[in-house]
Structures are given as structure tokens and as C-alpha cells.
Length: 115
Length: 113
Image (cartoon, rainbow over all chains, first blue to last red; front, side, top):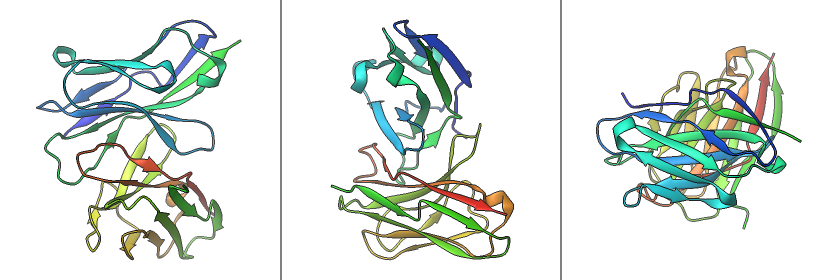
């Protein structure tokens, strides 16, 4: 069965520092991959998605992610973190062959930003 | 645009009580989903409706029922609430099965005592 793993439950970075959130997936073929962000008390907002093509994907709020097939990874990065980036981040996968549109989510990574 | 609207936002129930969470989207989307979010477990799919008139079980359907009332509305019902159903519930919708992006409501926080 396909699955998504986010190895880091909690990450703390200083404002202005770089950020990398890890995501690994388990799926036989190339899946569709997503990163969502959830601010406290809010729903989830899409940051970026990968379907095919260029393996480096740009998203909103200055985020990017790189799909690495050999490592089954889709890590999220940001060069310089802002205090407003403090939130919970979810990686998700959709089977490329899916006819149901069901997303499978990772457990989430909570990002804390130190002043 | 309202997007995806969920009601109520907060609810406290006693064990054994029933309630319905309402969800409506105004984006003319075909597919709608109900997820629950619990600490350390991410979001888990309860039920989904790939199109109007169809519903299917997701990962954790036990204790829930759903109704796709029309293209806009997708409700989630707890017939006899249990403390294990204390959670934050999210409704989501998407336009096409392969467009990928889910649009989420703001969530409904349910506590079962």
C-alpha cells in the first residue's frame, strides 16, 4: 500500500535560516506529490505540487520542492524562513493512476521559528 | 468566493448523541472528501464522493455515514458518538480527479465527552 512518511515531527529554525522538511513516499510508479501548509486553527492550503516534468517545483510563499525518484523523496525547502512560516506542513501523495482522487497524507511536521 | 464552508465550527457532544457535520462548496467541484485530523496521525480519509450520487469508504469509515445531497453539499453523520471520535474534521473538494489540488474548509472541532 502506498504511504507517506515525514520523519521529523517537530523542527525549530531561527528566522532567516534555511529550511528543509523531509518527505518520503512508498509507491511503485511515479505518484503525484503535494505539500500543504496549515496555520493554527485553519484549513490546509496548497504550497506546491508535482505531476511530471521538471523535478524542481516552485510554490507559493517562496517555497520549493525537489522530486528525487531514486530516493523516493519530495523534500520541501525555503532559503530564508520568516516568522509567519510557523505552521504545520503536510506532504501528500496521489496515485497517478487514481480514479478516485484520494490523497494520502503524511503525519505532518510542525515548524517553529525562533526570533 | 466562500470556497468550502463547514458547519458547525465547534461542537461538544455526549457519548451516544448523534450529529451531522455540514459541508458545502461553491466551486462546482465534482469530488468531495471528509478527513479527520488527529495529533501525530496527519489527515485520514473517512469517506469520499468522487461525483454526485456516489460515495465510498476511505481509510477510517467506522462510526460514520455520509450523504452527497447534491453537487454542492456533502454531509458527515455520527449516529452514536464515541470519545474516539473527538477530532478535527475537514471537508475538501476538487474539480477533477487528476487536477490534484484539494480545497479545504476551515475545519470542525468535535469533542465527545
